[in-house]
Image 1: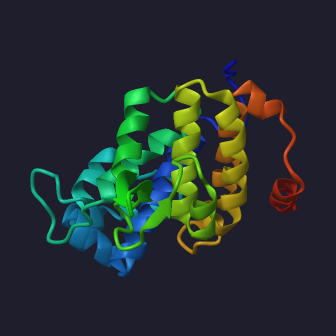
Image 2 (image 1 turned 135 degrees about the horizontal axis):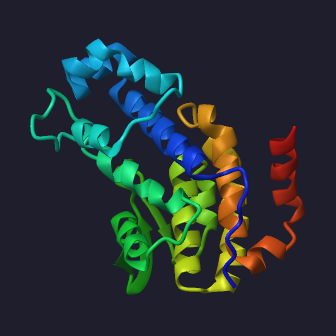
Length: 234
């Protein structure tokens, strides 16, 4: 029941999405100019080569080595680090239009949520490495409503993780329902300032993830989700 859809979102676009969102997230967290960021988080060699400006102009994109440097895991750490930088960069395997190994999806899920017991009831606690102070509690792991109500990129990211998990487990009915939540969470995600420049790529990616499962690809969207599609096409 899986289909390989060959559309606009191919490997080059995926690398651009991963690189541009990672860079914009790093700059947002650092809160400094690109040149200062290159000096403080990547080292003088990168700053002097003006590589970061090539990244910003989409002439090329950050690699995993850059993420290692920003996270402080390079052999010669820079003077400042963003510890979750590598986790964020590697998490973009979820957005690639190809099968995602079950163990990779499971590891990413387990890095974002855990089971907790509250008043003798088991609940699921979403807590993303990138926003550890914001906790989202749900009764069922596939309950997307609370993640949608976060109105941020991470709620959307959590649902994308569940979508890829449903695909990996071949739970196609769950995939259909979760894709609906993914579309509902998308507008708030692309409204986040550091995400907005990559909005068109992210929307194309969402379309591809939905089409990876035939049942989801042929299932009609609701009126609310169609309104999201209409805004995308304007």
